[in-house]
Image 1 (cartoon, rainbow over the protein chains, first blue to last red):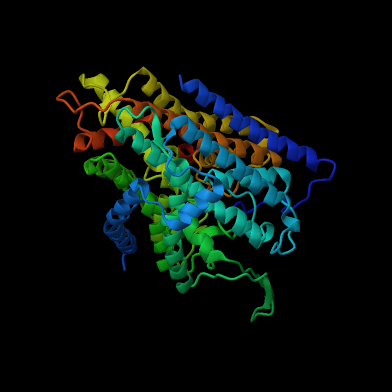
Image 2 (spheres, chains in turn green, purple):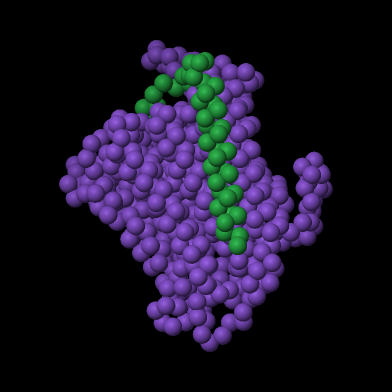
Length: 45
Length: 554
């Protein structure tokens, strides 16, 4: 729970990059949960 | 006074507290999750959420609810982190970076509470309260709900795959279990010296003339659910080593007690739900054997550390708080890694090599001793199915558990469950040590460096959250890698657990015959303990030999 060398805390990503990173992480989460739903569908035979 | 005496006394006090209260809470939990009566505030919530409170969900519908709720929670928490600078009570702190917001959102939704950041310099009060603390409650309640659904699957006969109502289980877990205990415990913690306010940091002058910044915040209320829900995310960077979170030895004992209370209670609740309390006692016994062994080994490893300084200090005191001593530290470390808590009252990177090995192995067991709230129970029950299956193969017994046949499909699901987390842990560790971005985070080289990486992926994959602090993880690489470890390690096993629950619920419960292996007797307890150790041992011993074992032998 305690990383002492936590690097640049509270840093801001540049405005040009941030929206793309946000989209990427949101899509990653959506893709992951979609995959789980597909796995569940496959198991329910 | 002998150095061993405080350890024995603290363990004895903890044991007595648990023996007195766990049976009472287990009975209450059984009532909560089986009562047909809905309380008035719950009915209001169901109406607002549009929930059919009396619906009995098929396992796939139950799973869809778990996943949907968790996905929405993740996105909301991510948004709160990214918009922090616009939120009230943000103390002027900026937004979290995208990778950090993703990691933290995943971390708290998965009940891991891994923290790449320092709470006091990164997270404002509103983000802590409305984001992180809320997830401390609901992620714990989700784990309990899944465990109860699995118990229902075993208890029901020919129920066409129906395992209960997730929304009712979630609501009752929060309102009837976690909230009331948290309120009482938070007031107790405040009385013991933990802080609870909305203050911004104060800068003060010390007697020596220096300046010091004293942080404030609603700490006690987050601290208790952090332990009770086996979450572990500290309000401050130092976590439960911070005097504002965990001021005195008595508060330390209270926090350890809160960590272990629900995991042991829900094991006994399982026995009540399946209609045979001996089954719950057998499962809780295995948990207790494994936990006691881990705490004993940890205490010995830290007290018997070689060298002049540890000899004079009565043990390896680097990274430990004097006010807790070796006994209070080892007890906490055993409890936090045996469950999915991950809170720390010492710096685990400073544990001796054997001590670090025990902490890591405790997590690698799958956190079943006694495990996270709910997740410990379903993890242990999956191993119980393995035990029954292996016993059946060895002695010609019918492979069945509580009247449910263990066929090809059932054991396939269990096998997938068993290999998922070790695969996540080992593959992630391999990625980290074979890439420049991963190696850049290492503080140490050699076996201890490997231990730092292995501990991190073990902690993330098993949803623990504690860390070997030497590893620098505040990078996009580690935030993303460990975020994915947490996601897969939490939700893929839940898919297999609920699928198996549905299969069991669909089966007709067979009467116990002469060919059935009794699953409440000492023989089964011994076998289950052995299976837990062997399954983990076979998987992790090679890498442990290269990391903490090699370090201990140097």
